[in-house]
Length: 171
Image 1 (cartoon, rainbow, N blue to C red):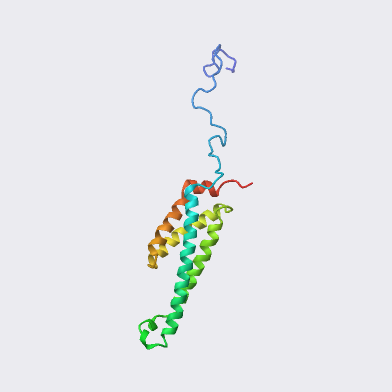
Image 2: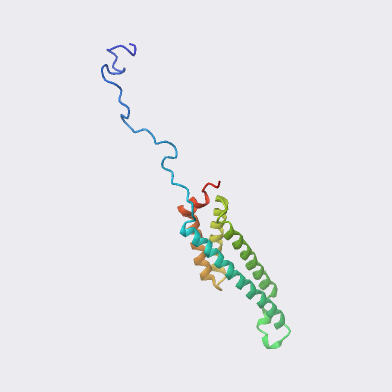
């Protein structure tokens, strides 16, 4: 039995052309349904950047307050009227001020990466938002603001619009 044999049950039926499209449809061309790359920053991503700049401002205030507190505790050790404040460890206060300064610099650098950064910047900003929210639970002074901002930054950068923005082609 060959292909041209009219008695072959597995061959092409005689007199009927083969119909394309019978069964499952063919796959669309690659990239036919891909969403276009955003040309302007989405609103949620822009909001995340603004929240980072607000955190920079809060960190400036926090660093200054902890620095002044450390100096005040150093001065209070000599004065007996401030005896209860003299018991605070000055080194710990300076360490918290240094952490606030590091957080300030990190958030400022990340806020500048929104226009030029790629997926690595997005992941770093996402980690920053999560760490900010976790550390806000430890440091209760303005902690609720940092908690909310950290969660919002992580959500806004981690959603589909944030992913599309940071993965856009750069020409």
